[in-house]
Amino acid sequence: MKTNNITPWAYIPTTYFMEGLPYAVINILSAVLYTKMKIPNDVFIFWTSWLYLPWVLKMLWAPLVEGNKTKRAWIISTQYAIALVFLFIAFILNTPHFFMASVLGFFVGAFLSATHDIALDGYYMIALNEQKQAFFVGWRVIFYRFAMIFTSGPLVVLAGKLEKTTSITTTWAIVMCTLAVAGILFTTYHQFILPRPAADGPQHAKSTDTPIYMDIFKSYFSQKNIIYILLFILLYRMGDAFLEKVVVPFILKPVDTGALGISTEAFGWIKGTLGLIAIIMGNISGGWLLSRFGFRKCIWWFALILVLPNFFYLYMAYTQPSLTTVGALLIVEHFGNGLAMMALSVFIMFVSQGKYKTSYYAISTSIMALGMMLPNMMSGKLQVSLGYQQFFLVISIMSLITFAVVPLAYKIKQLDDADKFISQHSTSEMME
View 1 (cartoon, rainbow, N blue to C red):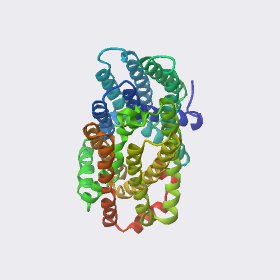
View 2: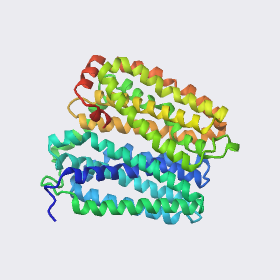
View 3: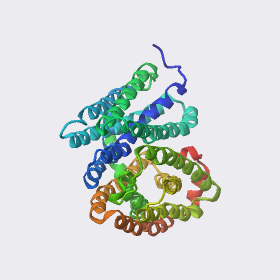
View 4: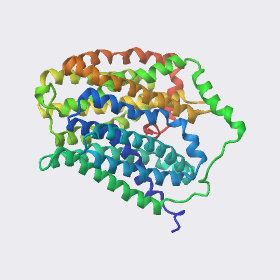
């Protein structure tokens, strides 16, 4: 079947949906699964935090993907393998050692997903000309986000409905099987529909290129004000990083444990669906506000709306408010998170200019992932030792460090350069 002339609309939506699907399952849905399977918070949060590692380190094996087989072949093979990982997890949920076996499965899935990201982003660059790349950059983000909404929203709502008629184990086995079947169907479609660009083939580096690979890291970490750059990327979202995994059991576990006792179905609608839509709206609004008023005027307000929701959780832990109040606070939190993430994305783009800007960007985003992983790993044990109320009090205070790192952005370079940079890029590019 000849597919080289096929419209990108036939595969861009589905391939980027498949890029977002495993990330959402591994880093978001796994927390819901383990909470419902009654795994202690400190145990599952510690082990699932390690699942960030492949995204932290993926740049290290990017040359392997680049130098072996076609990117199209990597895309197909990793998508099939991810579907098999989901199927494996579905079948081991009813076994005595399901927890560590499933964590291992998720870790393999994370490695495959990070590899798929490398291949797909490279494929995008060679399958589309520059004009089409520019056109579809925003659509890539949208369909990636759709995957996250589907996974955290409708799929969790389905789980909530199934819980009423069957066991928790069977419910989540059905959910994982559904994901596996969806993955297989999408991948089979891609096997037939993805074009075969003439430029898609192994790219073997010349021996003289080896020092360049090392020079990328050397030049990145020796640039002026690198300490300020690293501190900003690592600490800007520290409060959010500590909260990320803990909020799932806090919302879902029974009231007598100090949690909110909200149903799985309601969780899927509020946090998984409306919350993620609010993040997208925050991204869009953040891009517009930055282009309208500039980085210098927006960064403090964005930091405020990033930090404030930490105190929302403190309020909810002490008052255990109604479902309506919880929903409203979570939507505001997600909208603010979308705004703040746009500011961080612009900052990373701004400090990633230069000779190796693509590689600098990859290093910066890997550091950002590390900044999420390390607090994640500590948060479960901290919450169990303190309880929800004291945990949220401590994290609310710790989150104020965001206000300490914001001034560092002013020290790195004239922010007028950043505002000029923003004015030259569309909102969809900043969302990317």
